[in-house]
Image 1 (cartoon, rainbow, N blue to C red):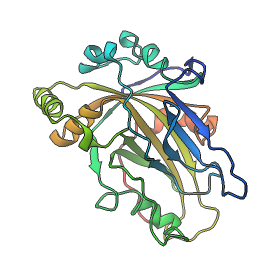
Image 2: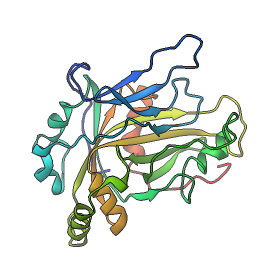
Image 3: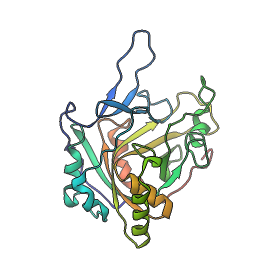
Image 4: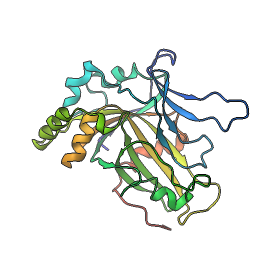
Amino acid sequence: MIKTGDPRSLGIPASEARLTFDTELQELGGGPRRRLLMVDDEPAFELSFYCGTCPLLFRRLETAREKLSLESMQERLTGTLDDPDDGGVIDAFGTLLPKGEYLPLLLEVEPRLVIPGREGDYFSGEQVTTWGIDQFWGLPEYPHTPYYRTFETAVDADAHLYEFVVPMVPPTWNERERVEEYVALMEQGMVPTAVAISTLDVCQPAIDRGDDYFVHWGLTHFLLDGHHKLEAAATAGRPVRLLSLLTLGESLSGAEDTARLPALRTQSRTARRIGR
């Protein structure tokens, strides 16, 4: 954690915002309605279900094809942001978001790229230890996207915080030349800044079916700007700053949970040990 701001009202009417949260329409005789992150009126990600007892989820959908960078902020974000309010970045990205209350968090992260189903994958690792595999499919949840793991720490003996950075499009869509440019800058000591809209989803299964029954706090950052920077940082093993705009109204967590988050984010990184 570098710095946190005060909660603030940001955004424009949802009908004009490029990024919104929504619930899909209920079809007659259909299953539960999905909670969605929308980009340009298209479903981009399916998120954790509203019940709070289903597994944590960010699943990329077929219509997730757009980044949300702002050309006017590129020069400012190539360098290090030292305060959430530096250079009007929050207000600029607020024009992409729906009206609501947001908590700005300025973080420094060292991202590690994870491929679903491979080593380090939360969905086939820590999540399975608590929920087990999906009872219908007989498989772990699958996010349909590579993603970055950046931090985790204990909330208490019965809860653990996991942090993820999720690109709007896969790293394979990034321009190789731009990634290499950022790698070179980082190796010279530069720490550029990325921007994300974030959710804090607190999930706990209703029934103990796994080997380690505890509450999962999922802090998920969906990248608005910084796709090349995150890949470069993961490639070079270097840090990058992340300005997170945490949505308070669309997260599956209460005011007491979000109030604890800044302090939790200053703790040492610690992995969960099964049963503890």
